[in-house]
Length: 150
Figure 1 (cartoon, rainbow, N blue to C red):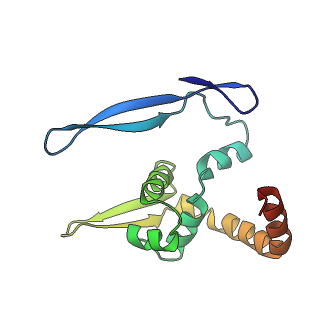
Figure 2: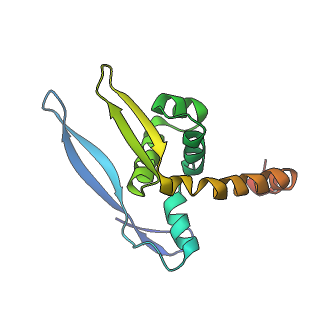
């Protein structure tokens, strides 16, 4: 599908309709976004943006580091995020080898997430960003409120 973007630039959006068979053999179609352009991976900033792009990823990494390892705990820590979006972003963090998932063989099934060594290496960077935000909190709130018309 093609459509004109905000500035008259044509962008291409792909939608993959993947049938999933339900237990009653009724096909269910899932809309999945397919990226049509390759990410720009020319420098470290591009790479980190590609890995951490997503509204909740930094918070997910932080909360997992703080000991909130179960999906339900993460959902409680980030109540504004839908379960679907959190699951997608957790999956991406797994694909980028920042977190691992452990599934316990018990009923009901239990899942816990933990940071990999690679993910742990991001925690000081996230802490520094948080500190900068805390130090500039008043100014940032004013600027964001003004730009959002709040």
